[in-house]
Length: 358
Image (cartoon, rainbow, N blue to C red; front, side, top):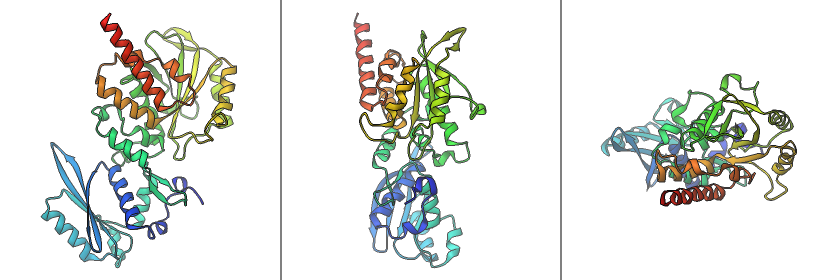
């Protein structure tokens, strides 16, 4: 069965979903649009999903009504009337079947075709064992946690895992390609919250260059080449990528008047498919980088965003902890795990405390 993350969700696949499965998908889509789920209220032939959204300095409720019977104009008028009576900021009717096809043109109605389009672009929807769309619970939990971080608007922490899946957040539609925004926001995160120095190659030369940027510490002795790979179903390095990256790391690169070796290539993406353990395809690729005196590391964008959120909660704008993180040790793991990132931050905190006490 084709993966809908690459070919799109078929509207017909949604009409047989259970009420619970449909509800979860609608909640995921609403989350994409910046709404926070509050409560579900079952009411016979429909159920009301109530969300909140920050409007200026206060929270306003938004009503989304999921209809279990064919929709007609009376349903549209009813949801609009009920939303107005409850003081909701907005209302929407979700309908898998329409009695009157002109309903699909009304902006208060989310038809099965429009829902399929939104699900196809959502970073929170993945295939289940049968290939049907379902909510990525891990990703949904991460999004909820990240939404509580206080630097999101400045460094795009909330959006990074979405870009990594080659998707655009609803509020950024028309603002650029996911791959370009992924590279740009990762670089911003690295050079602000993580306290690194860097040089971007720019999106204008994409396709003619190798990687996205060079990163290093304050007193640089070596460089790390970063390459952000936006991929809906995860990234697997091909022979062409391997060849170009290997050629690049064989030569020292100019950095502020010096020439420094490229000690590692860091790939950032949504996932890295493969068998767990030493049979993962990463290790075959990595061996070739080690043979030319460099290294290769893979990092999931979701792990980076989650760990950075924790770092920001403790350190806010202070990069003292980030400046003490031993990135060489973290990168040496290769297939970097979230625990390794957390351990690196904890060791940096301990080092800072000892320095302050001394």
